[in-house]
Image 1 (cartoon, rainbow, N blue to C red):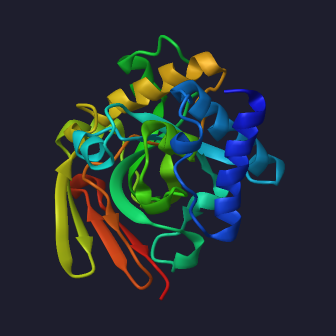
Image 2: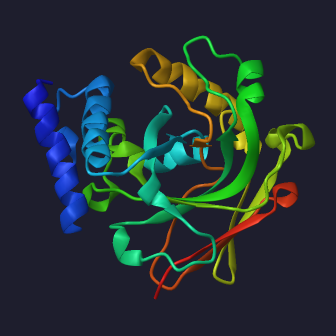
Image 3: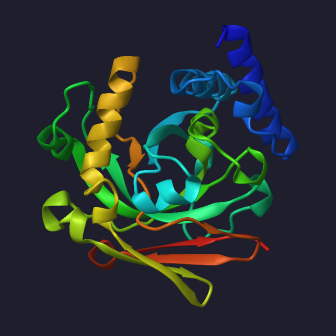
Length: 261
């Protein structure tokens, strides 16, 4: 794609944010768009947000589990940026009108203590870089009408990022095997899903390695203090105003997201 087309596509997505109205799939307008083009569109939006005063506080890996890839009709992970304005406090009402088509999913969030700079990052280096993990709920959202997304659409749309709620119980990696951490997801009074850490590329650590080695060649490092969401342990579930969502991750503790009426 020409740079002017990249800027046009980014402007369409930014307008969807500001107007609160989704846009038609980008792939329909730009059928020649590649995954590389999609990341250029994503970066164009990130530059706008940072220029407006927001701050990059981490990254997310999307579509890391088979369940999510099947649900979204794609066959590979992607990544997006987490901005400071996306983080919400546990138990504090989250304004539902902040989102267009929100869904929620449980994840094990990494908080980094050291920089990770790919390519060439190993599992050992990734483990060493993690300060602690906490349970998390990611709010995914799409600026594309009816979630009719291709891999190009979701990447361009910042990997369908929406918001993040972090739990408050930190756990050291030496205290838990992330592959074996089970999760139950409760929406209101109903248990809607169960999952395990091993559903995320075999281990959430593998998602962290993939992320570092994918963004490193682009000149992006994972910085100390940043949060990394490695991917969902279950499929995503729609949420609406007034909903309460609770994820129990056993030894990692639980995390609750409350949506304002």
